[in-house]
Image: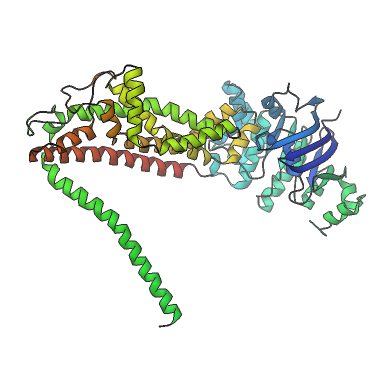
Length: 250
Length: 285
């Protein structure tokens, strides 16, 4: 019933102990915000969930992470299959230097899907879902690099949706965007919650408050407090959480 | 004189010294070019380009040498590009962390510094004698391919490294394997840079003389090579041969042949610059 569950996760970069005994559970169809000062390990934790840290030199970990009750660091896990299920949107919009259309269908093309009708249908569905369709429907052949930053980020979300994940990880998805684009992304997150489990890293307290159901506060690699967002923001159990949220440190 | 004036003076002096230094190089090139053009341009005609070498300077031409240079360029490219690009991809994308890869890397950098005559000796031993290829075009091309391999590997790696990490991650995050990411994202984005490196490496290869002399490329070839197993000559060897003759008329031939060789090299460098600019304009992250 938990969508994601981690037990006693520790992460090391060489001798650097960056995540310390983190155990947490995430319910399906919720938005979970990961907050904390820079270097607290929240991005590293996020990237554990689709094994994006595997490429970092010196990375090692202990503990278990389950997605749909499958241990994702077991030897049986096919990383590519995991990433189709657990999609990711990055901090800086990173569209491929291809057309808008090709960006959306990239995940399907690499699976060998050639059916034109299916690809066309996917492009429309995902762009509609990512609230970008109306802006780009007439020039799908245009280079994705010609879009504005906010549009590019929504395109990256559409691209992620195309491979039909059940979990979407977002690493400060709006930090490189202007306020209007940011609010569009936030509305989008709210919409997507119905179908997906979303975990979002953010530096923006108001954003965490607006979009998330639960909030996890990380500090120096520890999961300090993890509770309903309302509680974290109005009545946290620990003083350290209180201090961070009110801006007294961090 | 105040301190500020003094500093300004030093500044100006250095500026003009710098300009002078730059001009020394340019001046040398200019003198060389003008000298060659005055000597050789009158000798350049269709007869010169389309004739076989001859004992008589006025009847001699560069056809076999020019054809040999073209052959060498193509065969060397066919051998060196797949090897060099694949090795570059391996080192940059797959072998990053292992000790084995770092030993390889050091040795490739060493290879780039080996004098070309050494490659000639290696080639004559392995390709000409052990593999029995003799003084053939193929033996020459294999030798030159080895010679330019480090250059291609290094430029492939640089071009690949210029592709931002975010593009790689974007591709991985959608479930792409490493090879799919290389094939669909990294190679298309770095093709311009790789091609530039390849062309510059090839234009170096066609200017090489020493290794081919060791291999046994001939100065007198009375036919145009038709297979990679044929004997051959190349422009630099033809030039070397003509320059070392006592008769003045052959020196004129040499100057004309130098012009042809320069045109070929400049053309290739021009293409490389063009590709680099176009590539830079096309891909902005």
